[in-house]
Length: 139
Length: 139
Length: 139
Length: 139
Image (cartoon, rainbow over all chains, first blue to last red; front, side, top):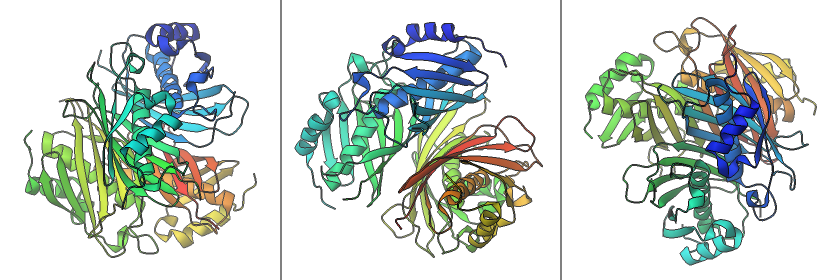
């Protein structure tokens, strides 16, 4: 299973398709069936109290699995998120970036499924896990 | 089962606890076990193409169930979202507000569970559904 | 939106397609976008302690939404469950049947989504909620 | 993080607490934060057509994470499943056992979270994934 997009290609795609988050998210690793992104945490991602908000972690999980799918099928397809199940397990560390590692578990003709673990940079215990499903449009 | 907070109380709480979204979200209805909020859709909520983004719908569902819980247990408790499962079913209508109706299904000593339907204003078919769990801290 | 199958038709389908559960489950109500089934609770559904097991409630939710989809699209299609999110909220009452009410939230060309509430017969508070997605095969 | 129960202890617990499934499920591996069980697939687990049923896979995921929690906290606590999100991704191979590998992602004072991958024995691509949450009763 080869990749159809590499890290620079994914990063360029992000700038075009998601300009509002492209400056915050860097693809740091791309391996077979696995992709890692890093969120440069900024004030707008934080809740009062200083931890990263739930919607921000949802967005991060969504972008990570989406890019993992695109790395496999290429930038032509317009995948749509149809389901996400997310568990918030620990409070993220204040002032730490978030590292999100996605596994692509299925990349079918109609549906793709992936899951992620999110960690505060430098911490062993994950702050969140999520699984997401995408509908792949017919060619 | 009486309410411990009414609509003005919930709205004031929102301004204090979630200043970043308080101006966008209005509590429009509060009934037994049910609460409705309206999101005034703005540019920052949109994806390229003009539909409301997934993280925005996640945030809306989270706020709606959170307020439904607070209406029951009062503003003292600091409930934390532990799980969300969300299904994106249809593309929201461009230029329409989102209406989110939450049902409180369980409000226990330790866990609370609610679900929501989200509609584009004026449309009969829901754009998303979600269910959320919150951990209630001991008093 | 008319139904393509009525209650006797759904019940006959159940006997053919799911002979192992057909004797236990009765379709008791079929309305627009809503279908109710009743599980005659038997020893094999119980955990030690006398409450209905999780897999039994999962099965009941799955059958209820599946039948709600078939009532709309007819018995020809072979829908496959792709996702289920289920919350177990209260212990079912021992020696009470389970009532499961399904709502069909989306019935698209490729995906169908429904959710359920499960009650112990005669109780107001739900014991479980679930949402399920089905993949509809191309005709 | 040491284990409070080893494989023979978990197997004995299974016989006592879940006699109805104990003969079908073998704990085959126990490592730090990970536990593997094998389901000896029998006729009663099959749907018409010969593949393993959804409720059976749900049960397998539930038992695997439950045992992973008990291996950490010991047999005294009575954990209760509160949420499960499961994705059915591929049809299991007929006549093959199922291998279910659970990761314990959080084992807190009040909540524990784990996830699983389920494979047909001998196959590289997973048939299902699931994440589960358990409520841990106060001591």
